[in-house]
Structures are given as C-alpha cells and as structure tokens.
Image 1 (cartoon, rainbow, N blue to C red):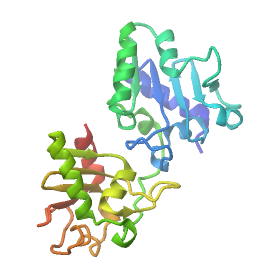
Image 2: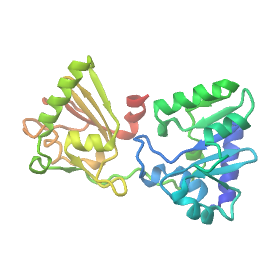
Image 3: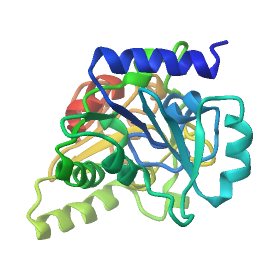
Length: 276
C-alpha cells in the first residue's frame, strides 16, 4: 500500500513536470455532490481524511488540509503522521485556501485544479481573485488521477425505473413542463448535471453514490430530444423501452435515437464534450 509520503512525492513529481506551483484538491465530483463515490475521493486518497468536506493544497514544500469544525478531531487523527497540517476553517486568522494561495504564491505561478470537479462559478471566482497577482489557473489537468494507482472505477449499479405510482408524474409529463419553461426562457437546450434533478426528471433511481438513490449520469434536454449520458452497463435491454417516456412505443438501443427522441450514450466518453 502506498503511504502518504509516497503519494505526495508522486503528486509533486507530476506538478514539477507541468510547472505547477500549487495543486488544489477539493472534495467534489462533476455533479457537486456532498457525498462522492470512491472514484472521485481524491482528497481522501491524498490526505487519508475521509470527511465529506475539506480542501487540500500541495505546493513544493507545503501540504495543508482545510476542513470545518465538524471534522477537526478526525482530520488531526488522520494526518498526524503525515506532512499535512490542519487549517481550521472558520477560526480567526485562518485564511481560506484561495486567499492563502493569493498571499503565498508569486506572480506567474500556476495553480492546478481538476476542472471536472469545480463549477464554472468557482472557476471564475478563483481566476478573478488570483488574477490580482498574475497567478494563473489551469483546469485541464487531473494530476491526482495520474498519480493514483488502483483508482476505483466509476460504479455501474443498475439504474432502476421509479414507477409513476410513486413519482406522481410520468417522465413525459415532466419533460413537457420543463420544455414549457425552456420556451419561456428562450432556451433550446438544458444541461442537467445534478443527480437528484436527473433522478426526478427521468424517474430513475440507482445506488452509485453513498446515501443517495441516484445514478451517475448527465442529461441533455432539448425541446424535441432528450439524451441521457450514462454508462451502458447500467441500463439493460428491458429498461430501454421504459425510457421511452412510459408509452413503450419504441425500443431505445444504446447510442441510437428512438422515435420518442430518447438517447442513451456512454457517460465516460461523452461527459467532457457535454459539459465543457
């Protein structure tokens, strides 16, 4: 098993190869969930701290973990034999990680954050802040992924149909209401990233995320078409017709457009094009 020191060494080697002065590792996934599946628990892998909230920052000679009061005792116990030190978020005189970077890095230094796990608003916030000192932000690198040996794969638990009996409305009825709002807003397409939103809109349930009955997926809703981006192994042949908005008028094979305008595509190959 790789220990904390070896992980930091591997990460810093990757940082040096890409001329990165600081690496930020948040507690998030592409859907901004509080609870994330093992594949996205990069901060936990790096620090050993498994709480649901926290951010790690690694530089050439510093390793810092930020977390709030709920986890101070746990965090200290997990990092006590490592290079990491704890910054107690919310305490007086403790800067947030983005302010610490602003104060401690130099002009022209580069900060890396995996762009898959931060929102556009977060990216803009950090960029605007660090631009004050000409500190550059890169979001196109997954340095943890390059160093993380035996990283857990994305889960492929079976997607389950959530009956209209319990949902109250069919997928077709929900799509119609969403389309009405899109027309009012002047939108032709709606990118749905929240797993709870997708679970509601598509009447789907799953077991991909701890403590949440959701599936890892994205949905792209158009006025006349819905595309569900999901791992094919999660959806069997008997389920494809159900995705045809409960009228079962057409079979929906993976990657093909049904008569009811539902598509099911591979999550792993499509997600970056869909979001970025």
